[in-house]
Length: 353
Image 1: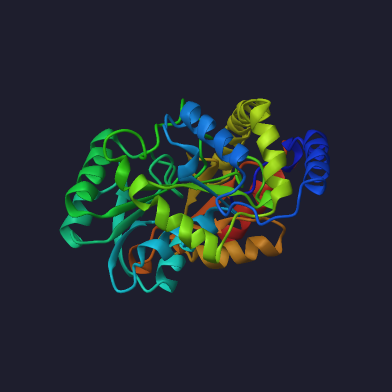
Image 2 (image 1 turned 90 degrees about the vertical axis):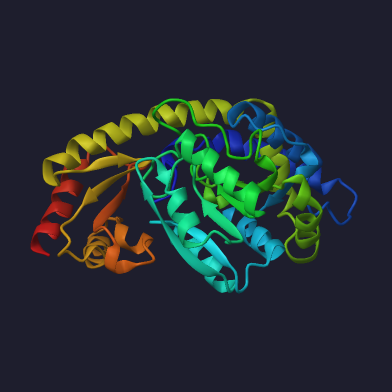
């Protein structure tokens, strides 16, 4: 899960841009770089967000990171949640949950349904929470989008209680069913939202590049944390991505990926449904539900030994006794020539278990 299509990465184009970036970096005077990242890259990211996520932000609000994990730790270091209650989605991204645990936060799981986070449940359980960590554009892993009513309720709660919202822009604008919803960090209420994005799923996790859009109230503190603990990653990659964005290659790449992933997701659902009934699409994957009696973690482990790579749905729940059982199946690297054999193998593993 979370790995983009290997065969669709523009390797030759990227190699040329990377080579130019290496040469440009080599002839630049040696100096300590801006801890926020290259100004030209931050300008390009701000321009892209204005088009793709309807966000109006200044480049000085953007901090370039090595990916989602560094962005999240920057935000948590600045907010200092130790001993404070925080909302997490249930189910929710295990890595984000673990980051909160490492910072000493008190986790309050808030259920997710077809409209996204049940904000009223969060208010009932922990109205005084310091922050909420959410994936409103496409929930990880269920793929649902936060409804307008829930969106307003979440922003209103943050404004009234002085809480913060960390928006994990999971999958970014890779919305396969229509246009991506505007980011939470848009318009009224945006001053309480820390937006975290990444190029890992849109381009490649090998780039090690992401960004944080800091609300103005927190920008100075986040920049200070970045300067002291986690300055922006290597300049060469930043320069190459700057050119990739500026020349329009990124938008073209996203359009191609959306078409490719939609085709592969339809192919996956058609084949998987023959073997595992009740399967449904979710983001860039398919969820194959399993009976409550099944141990999806064991099924996933056995499948990996046979060259398959499902993820256990139950691992995304904090409260395992309430967890749904199922398999998360990525569609990004499927091949038409081997999908039937892979589905048949997975079905036999499930049946035998």
